[in-house]
Length: 470
Image (cartoon, rainbow, N blue to C red; front, side, top):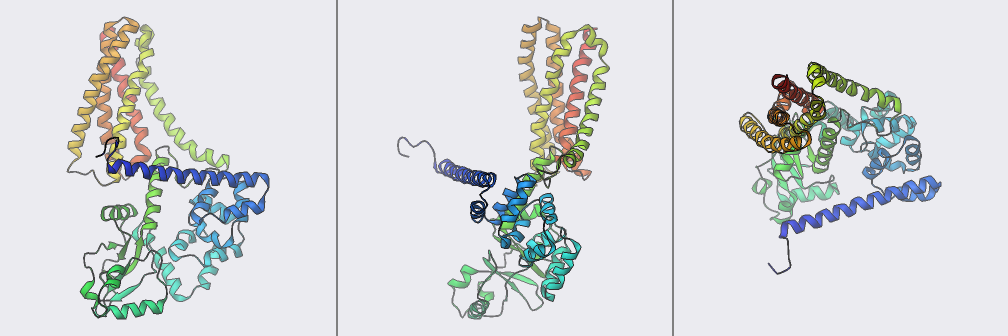
């Protein structure tokens, strides 16, 4: 390495990548600001010109970030041919709002030209009259395709798949395939592979376009096809689909039914949407919200949705307060305990949250199961114990210098060690227990963990103080 070069290739590459991403995000923010400024100034023509530079996905992101009155104006200025795909790129609440402000004929025009997999995402939100008219306007083949996609759960391989695929047979020559493709004149978007099937449409393997173009035209498909396929069952969950793409660095995969009949394909753009939705979902659920919430929904609607979660938190807070009330006599006699009490609960909450986040991530990525749960539990308890010893020593010194009471210093040190051990234990066991009960750990884990660490912390600290000082 030359003198003066301070990073190896990987960090340098990551730095350039980060800079590119940051630049792209800055450009997007600047464009959003330009559109907002043009909208506020009343420059409708200029606003429409700026909107023409946005992709449907970018337009969808813009609509989600606007209050409803401005969203209506932008939607009216957007080009009609972009509306259908934009509807598939916004969350459920925003989509419902946009559909509500559109006339039936506008909806029909917007959805008629949509790709079948995108149309399936929007179809359930369409008014019954529009949905019926749309089905009538389709030919029988497209109608069957749409009904096929709608028959599968939205968060499954069947719900994600695109049935616009190109299949070939193993017993034909490459020259025949090439002539067939020329007759078609175009391929579905993101086609990197042709799917090889037999006469009964059972999946046999893949034929990459690179292999098709670089081999002798007289060879048969079976001579150059790949049988090491990554076919997914139609019932595979969306999370497992995303994990499959990640592990195998795929661009597209075939989707089959239990009898190995080829049904469609999933492409990387659909998987990127799944990954983004999962990230949004985890973030929002940790606050008790839904990732499909409209950021600018009516105030009363938002109040009603958040009130439930606040009520649950109130119940847990009352439970913790009830525990404190049990030691009212101790607190009345030794005021210093009331001053120091939040330290124990807070330290336990932070330690537990660190473990909780680690475990929820492990569950989401499929990295945590019966084979390694005990090892992780032992590790986290060890981490909690060592952190407890470290920080209890520091806190004990601070408390002694503050109050000059060695006994109270020892009590808070012991309570900290106890709470941090139980916090890490709860951080592992709570999400695993919730998963077994079929409850999303990201949704309820933090509330339960906070309750546990508060109660254990208060009981340990005030209980020891009651036993020793009174």
